[in-house]
Structure formats: structure tokens, C-alpha cells
Length: 97
Image 1 (cartoon, rainbow, N blue to C red):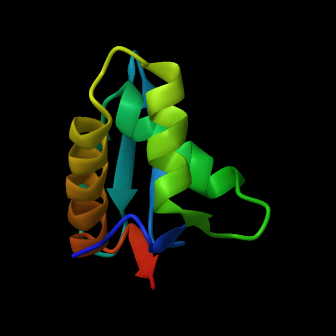
Image 2 (image 1 turned 45 degrees about the vertical axis):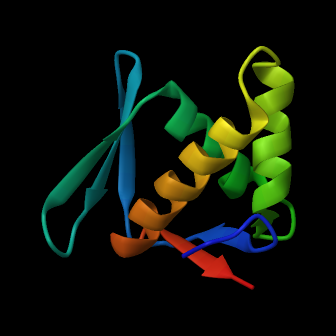
């Protein structure tokens, strides 16, 4: 399981398209697709835009908390870690410690 002290990187194992308010990811090897809500899309874009190719998970949580200051930091962290674990299970993100 990922922790706030880890970093994440995107894999090259998916194609994506935007449909209305959702980003759709397709794994061409399995034919499986995943829908990301705007927050999930924002997290993935942050990782894809990282200059070093990876991004500290804590910085993702900090950025989301800055964008949504009324939300509990711990809740955001929990949601982000759950999202990252799911994306890692589907080989869409790599977690590095």
C-alpha cells in the first residue's frame, strides 16, 4: 500500500480520452477501461506533468487540500492513497518508495 512518503509515476500502458466531465483510460492489452472523475483526472495529470517523471504523493495531497481547503486533510490523503492503490493494481501508476 502506498504512503504519503512515496512517489508515483504514470505508466505508458494506457490510452486516454475525455468524455464530458470524465477522462476515460483504456488498457489496450486487456481492453479494460476506467473512468476518472475530475479529481482523479487532476491527480493523474499532475503526475503526467511532473518534470522528473514522478511526483511525491504528499505534494498531490497538499495541492488538493489547497484547492479544497474546507475538506479534511486526512480524508483527502486517505482518498488519494486509495485511488493510487487502485491505479497501481491496474498498472496505470507506479509507486516508488
